[in-house]
Amino acid sequence: MSFASPIFLWLFMPVTLTAYWLLPGRWRNALVAAVSLVFYTWGAGAYTGLLLSAIAVNYAVGIAIDSDRLRERSRLRLYLLITTVLWNLTILAVWKYAGFASHQIDALSSALGLGHTPIINLALPIGISFYTFHHLSYVVDVYRRSRPAQKSPVQFVTYIAMFPQLVAGPIVRYHEISEQLADTRRRKLDDLAVGFPRFALGLAKKVIVADSIAPIADAAFAHPGGQMTTATAWLGALAYTIQIYFDFSGYSDMAIGLGVMLGFRLPDNFDRPYSAYSITDFWRRWHMSLSRWFRDYVYIPLGGNRGGRLATYRNLCIIFVLCGFWHGADWTFLTWGLYHGALLVFERAAGFDRMPGNVIVLVARRAATFLLVVVGWVFFRAENMTEAVHMLGAMFSWQPGAPDEFVVFALDHQRSLVLVLALTVVLLPSSFSLGRLVESGRGPAAKAARAVMTWVAAPYAGVLVAAGTFSPFLYYQF
Image (cartoon, rainbow, N blue to C red; front, side, top):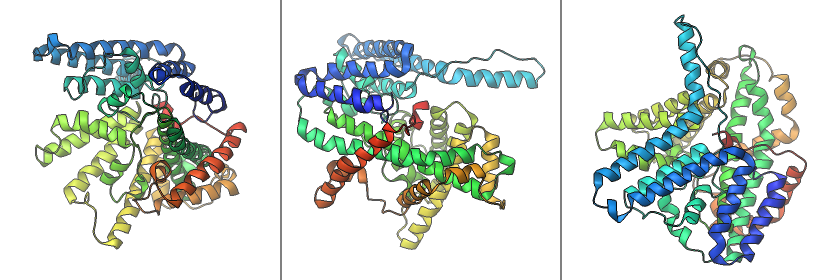
């Protein structure tokens, strides 16, 4: 069930919010847990059993690790932690990576003349990458004693399965929300006044911008690589750059807004990433909850930047190999991760990770960073490495000719205008955030922004949804 679908907008969300308003405050977590499982079952079906089994195991292990009986038995606590982490990662590996691994084994076996090997084909349970990371955050936080184990099964299900963030984030570390789970005091009107405009902003980003531009990117990336003109390649790359930002940040805004309306404050996930002055700065602004997760649970435990330059470079490369594969089991995602890891290492070595003081240098650095990000998105979007190489070749070696006819057909006047206006996000000041302005800004500008989101953007996006122009969020596939 997509947030941008009629069934969600006109049935699921109103029913959930009405029940939240009518039921006593102490029933909030039970309500959120119940409707979240309904939400997940709607899209995942039988895979809900996999989610529930993971919830049961991690809930029990958390209580065991935090129990008085094991408080002084450090080895047993560590053994339980390692076993549970491996169990969670094994589930993720089997369902997400077994098929990819079987294809690589088959290709290698065939190349060596040993014949074909069995191919594994498993459907990917939606949200598995996200709820696996939530479980890992929980057991590690409990092991570190940064937070006590969650004794209430209802509150634990609420944390893991909370429908605003269950299938596409933000990734909420347990210590960020543990105290909120116990606080069921409600500020209904205030939460609605703050949360709905943020939700409306995300809906507008998704339906009005991302879904409008998607046909341009789809047409360009579907073009045969050997015949691609430079115009087609650049239009496709820029369209996807805008599409993925407005699609994913739109989902995050909707999730944050829904969380607020239900009494939760979820962490921000985007902070004007296309205004970054370096790739290092980009990763402080793009999918911030994933960056923080890898920092806290992988990068710092590996040693972070404490072991000297070479160790730091190694740790950065490990993080971005994992980041690439977390997004998908394909060589394109691995290449995208390695590409960003290599750029981070280069910036760290050359000193380009620090903000320049000169305005002209800053503008040039922002333009160069945006170009590097666009190149990376080609690997991320391409169906395979051959397609990515063909498109990058067309982008950087002049291939004369007009855009492909299918791209021209997709590039009508309305989509052209949306693409040009959306590209202006690159030019805005890096400190400006419409999401923050809508949610917590004060003064006439903030009030006007909230009014526009509520009374203009949301109704118009709703009309587009009713007309059947919505599509699934891109990050549902991860």
